[in-house]
Image (cartoon, rainbow over all chains, first blue to last red; front, side, top):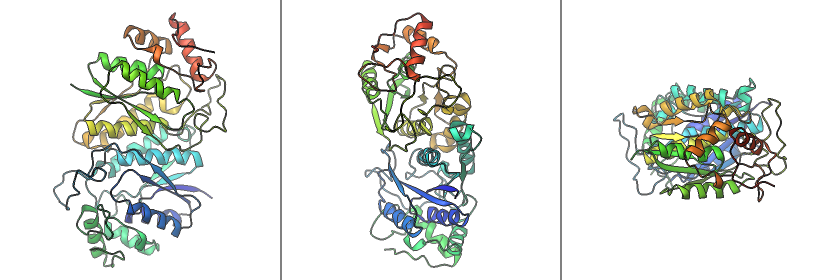
Length: 219
Length: 219
């Protein structure tokens, strides 16, 4: 059975990616990261999603925090959602680059054909590492910088949500039976979701636009 | 003062990079990695080299081992040097990709202009992530995938040894007064260097070709 590594944060997008890779017939190898994020509830959500799909292995990699982000530095406050086109302070330097690097190394070790990453360039926070240019550049790295790549079997980096709006993603997830009730998106990591940070705002708008009720709890 | 992040393994090449970045007027921010490598003596060497240059900060990042290499898996033996054009079992999946990803994140946090990596495509072990194509692909990732990149100040990935033979590197290091006596290259990580693994073989050949005596001890 062909294998895929899924970057699983426990959020809405990565949970949807699990459902897509599953439908596409891959054996799922989700990986998650503990990088000092405030929202460690995400890791619990990731574990629940992995369990839902009855995966054989769910690796959690610990990453030393390089600093510089509201998501990892308690002295920087998580802001309310703003639509000003700026990269917000929740940007974690080189986060997706780091995540994909681990995914590549792990994919080589288990001989996986593909890596799924739930980035979208439509409803997103303006992070540079969520755009198609980034994806293309990283695919090139996988082609020329790994053993599988130079041996003519490059690992495919798949970002099936890259052109989807949040509403489209929610519709697709629902269609695929993805366990959105187990996912969590809030940056603040409280008992319930805050409903006002970037991530909650985009999620709630998406559900509203899709005409579907968000199954998780908010304050 | 302009800052540079130096990938410092404690080996010959990265020690030479320290001397080059120093000559080029950068404030040095070496980073090293503990990734479960056999040769943890390298980390001690890295600390000594950092101390020699009186750096303000030397970060050591712990990386969870993804497996699959003789350098990190005790059940795979480190082989003797072979000139067969194959990628050896000492290849660590996605290692330089992972190292550069950490370097990028850290460089963004401290606002460094450059990252130095001591890869060479001349006298090397045949690893895909030591070639100019790889370097170019990763530079593109730094340009499109980071905040500094999209803001028009991409971090420069510098590989000053990429076209140098080991002998050239040794000559340059000697000219720059690099502390090669503090460096270590052996993959086996014994009390003294083995002199027969890939890394020792390339090092010893280089010193012989340069007509310089290697200041470190061998069995």
